[in-house]
Image (tube, rainbow, N blue to C red; front, top):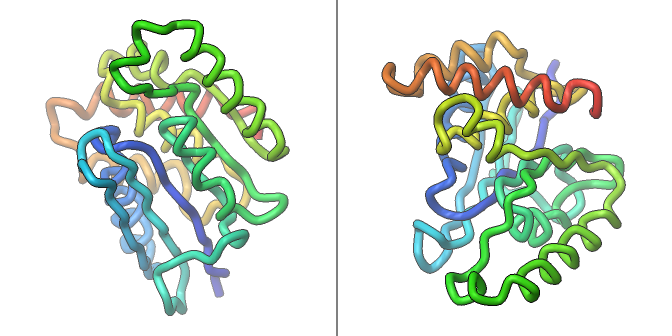
Length: 200
């Protein structure tokens, strides 16, 4: 019997949150597990807030996750991570990219942006079980800037007790990702895995 594994994936539209959900769903179903999920999109799908609740297990009911019950949160953008961190239970794990996306108008005020970034980090630091890393930089290193989501997927594979193995995630990645982007995504997965291997 596999215990129900509850998780939250969040970020902004265009970062590939739903692709992560698809890969996790493929991997879980291939393994014979059930998956229930719910998605919420912001006012503008590209650039707006996007959050997915995902439950993986054998006997599932409601797809939504109550506040304070999720085992892990994967955040592609720090402000969104802060917005949804309340869904993680005490002792849970938060894996978040260091990326912070500001409105275009903020690009003219670097001091304000830096101050806001620092405040977000301070608030996130209040939650003890979290891992930060430069997912955007690792995606660029892999040769595909849009593979930040796959970097985070690699990091997720190292969370203790996660019900899907590295190999199962890679196999699902091969099914879901178009062939022309597969090599870059596989590199991104490995970079993400290695970046957090000693920190979780």
